[in-house]
Length: 122
Image 1 (cartoon, rainbow, N blue to C red):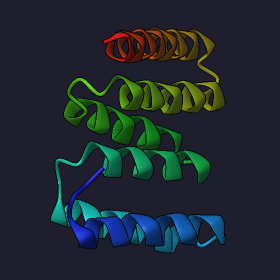
Image 2: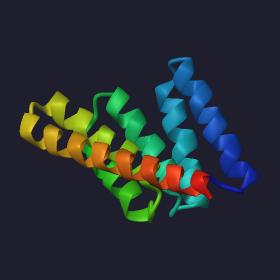
Image 3: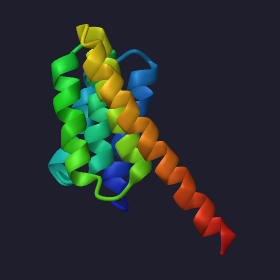
Image 4: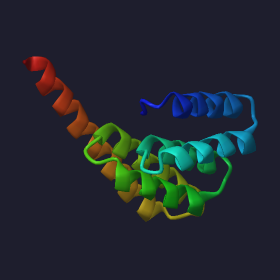
């Protein structure tokens, strides 16, 4: 996720705040982390997930897409981003778009699993 202790502390703070129902504080912590590491795909994902929980579906989709743009070849993270998009689309009433996003996530999860099995075979 990050090697920066400040970013790790902010991620931990955001998780704790989310768990305790302090979503605005969690969002602030994640946004501070993004000021430190604006290309950190995990931070973008966590903020997208938070916005999904808050019912801010269009923003959740936009943030998940931002995470996708920085995730490179991290298939597991890409799959999580597509799941956020799928869930947001469900909430928006876009079942066709949701189905497409969930298929994308499943394909990425399958590819990630295959990659892991290949690595463990050696």
